[in-house]
Amino acid sequence: MRRLPPLTALPAFEATARLGSVTAAAEELGRTHGAVSKQIKHLSEDLGVELFEKDGVGLKLTREGARLRDVCGPLLDQLSATWQALAPDANPLRLSIGVSATFAMRWLTPRLPQFYAQIPGAEVDLRMAGRSRLSEEDVDAVLTYDRLNWAFSGEKLPSARGKHYSERAAKRILGDVAFGPVCAANYPIELFDGGARAATGVHVDGGPRSWETWSVLTDLAFEFETSTKFPHTFLGLEAAAAGMGVAMAERRLVEQDLAEGRLIAPLGFSVIPDGFGAHISKRSIRRRIVNEFLDWVERLAAENVEGA
Image 1: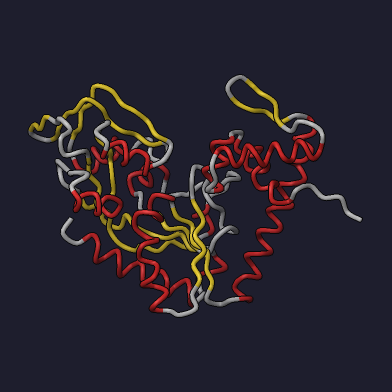
Image 2: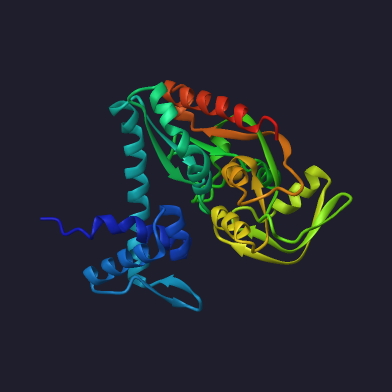
């Protein structure tokens, strides 16, 4: 009889071991920090030894943890690849899409019922593309709207294991993007010819050079006395709405906030052509459901950027 570890806890352990951080693992898995920590603790208690130990402000694997990581990683990779290969055969209307949590929450998910109405029986499995990018084996396609980061990454999406999704995946342009600074309506801003200045600029981990690239592409400047940083784009946008500073945003992500007056765009939005796209895995290029989904997204993208 096999004695197996608590299998539901293994992804939390593997992600933490690979990324070296519970916070990063929680972001990748779409879980809370507490939930990931609890699963790792459950594994350690079941095994009777510690899998991690403190290393300054971070974590490092114990000898036992390193042995489990060496086995666990390849097994989960193989299981994931097999599962993804079997899924299209089991349900030809099922597809998996990698997308940022902010884009999923603020734009894509509210519109998915339209796609389901258009194609009855379709199932879209959303995978969060966080600090550790998804590999080609993980999803059928990755949606990426953040042209401000493409400009500094050679338009490559690094996967969690050091490869690049776009080296093997097909690229498809889905439309333009429109970026601009946003802040609360009462946040003090000084406008000048060619830009503006304010007390605090909001930065996010996922877009470390967004402000710099926006300035280069638009020939506008935004000067700050200080800056603050958040791990997620949606947290940065909420901070801006709360009056904590000025954030950089793609128009689709803040359209409801603008309509409700929670945010304003003091310099408007600048359109960046062909900034919204998809990286399609080689195995999924000819899948009908994948192309129908991307056709639908492309139509929506054209509608939403008009007038930016």
